[in-house]
Length: 384
Image (tube, rainbow, N blue to C red):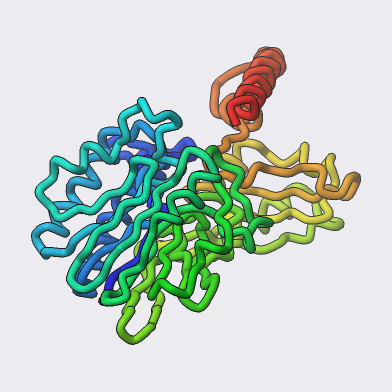
């Protein structure tokens, strides 16, 4: 069988403080929706016999309305082209108890041919001469082995395993997200003609017959070197090929060596790095490193001009290595994590406030934001 393998669409993912000027939606969120639907058209042009999605279609258990309507639009196109969808739930869109309704329940009302596994158990589907063995994200890590033991590959058919989790040989690359489970190597059985994996966001071959397709989009800055897209799989010829899919670019603008530079010179170099971008790259997520910069130079960089430069792209993440204390400034890698303390300072720079009032508001506001952020992190870790 010839099919396309994708995973980790994370529909509903939003980030940054940028809005689409036409619809008012978070710009990053809209990019994810638009690119997903364009990706469906790319997949359709491949004329696959099926589309396999290995988990995390949605970014959350309770998807936004636009996330649902985007999926329904994609399903309608697949129905029109008579392409079946084989899909499992991943950890991001999996209810944490058996008593919460899964977002995948809604998909069952669409007339497209959908084979969905999301009920914490092994299920299988047959399309043509191929049997798809589906292991959705489980409540507990030990549940995978129990469900896997129920599988009996059909010797008269091609057999494809679809599951979601991190194989133990990649345990050092844990995403550390809720309900992330490590998959025992026994699941990577050579009895399957192909194993479609989801969860790890970089496209990677794990064994001769097992692949992560990777995510279509960059979901955090740690993925900047990852290969994004899908895979075209032909089990008859044992071939796996990369498929380019539309996504918002993430660009490393390099390192500015700031030793001996004044604030104005650093600012000029940042401006030059941004001006090197093409028109298409203006909606990109960018990373820039300021190396060996003095703290006093950092403090004298004009905030308003920095804010203006950052507004020229979707998001500009600035990594700072100060001369006084190496790597003293670090930033979270997840693009959904916003440095609200710094953002509040940048926001005040855009307001018509006298210096004394600004200093008072900044001090009080940052105190509140730090307290709220710390409590949020404590609650998050407690939940995990």
